[in-house]
Length: 588
Image 1 (cartoon, one colour):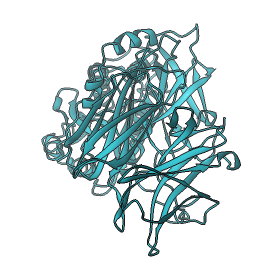
Image 2: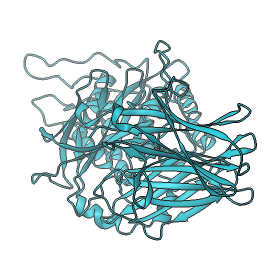
Image 3: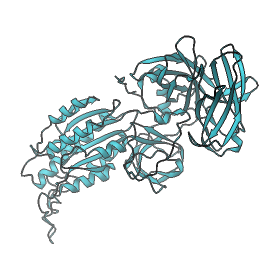
Image 4: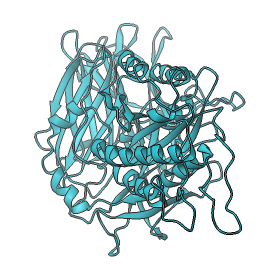
């Protein structure tokens, strides 16, 4: 059974560094089918705070759940190479859902669609997701955060509607005000310091702002002012709450509105319960989700959209007011992308976040199993033979920020059942490249690396490692490694830029000293594609049972992109064995 991982209580998304770390903002970016955009770049986004365009220093995608496959079946199928290394981008942090039921808006006996929607929602939760259930304005928290789907369903089954069957316009305004006031106090209590929360509001209607009295008279007892909606705007921005409003399909006019007479009296405001919902959507940036006939499939859209979000570090500005709510908007430059964000945001002081980060320790980060992207990382692993029946997994760790100096680094190898099979902590994290090793039994593992740099930024990255050797007759092949040639030997490297040549190397184990074999390197665009380049390799005997094969990959002749490198050996009887790895060249 998979480990249940605890969330950190420290805001890592807004940690500052001594080098002038900028504040961060987050938003959702989805494609036409509702799945998160996988490849958004800073150039694809315009961010405005207080109606001023801000410069984006860095843009990171934070995965919170496995992305759902595209709904379109018309997209052409393309062959994709395995990722060349693990990064912060492929760590699923889990999602925080807060289910809020506007209890006074639902009539008793009409909760079946609500329960069906939550039942379908609970069936799609992942082991890392945490969900709270609350009934407002008076019910409070019915279930604290849990990933137990059965408890979530039982908590919602216990909520009964309390709406009046003969609700007047004044009643509608009064209960809307009660609900907004309770929500205003509720949301800040459950702010997540580490990631945005998704608030799913179930309501059967709200009142729009109204005086509840004729214009010539003082406001009525159930006056509902615009400021009550605006206060929710500030609360949602400060709490990093992304709202969805789930509404029954048959909601409509409760009675015809009374229009103001020519004398200026008699207008009490519209009693249409949809108008208040529209005001709420404008105040929070919420998306509306209709309850279908049974409700079970209603929340599928928000489950897809919440599988990832983007976090942008922006250039600091002297006019930034930390701790104050400011107007916030994002706009997509790309036509195939829809961006959504809260109408207001409360920026956190990066210097304060840096002070909090100094209290972090790598073992705590490894145990949190949360997506932490403040320090961008690249990690890779390769299997080599270990005496006995075990495999030694070598680990390469790089910071994607060339200016970063790592101060503390640790790694885990996690088996499929959640068991920690190997641990490693760096004695000197400043070494470049930073190399580690763990001995485990053959199998497939998740490599999880946590690191903190000298300025307090933290990062966690994951990669999938096949800890096994490739058998070729009486021989076995270790993992393929990449690096650059240096006087002291091969310097391992995960990503390449303007280097003219990369060195590829793998070990060959077993056989006899007189055994004849051939070896070569192939570079191709596809896993089974025709080679673009074929290179001979040099075989160097290390000891009686180990030979190292080394060859050059001519990077200078290749445009930027991902390539599969195949290390091949051929035995005298014609048997061919190979090891492969993806190599990435990026433009500089």
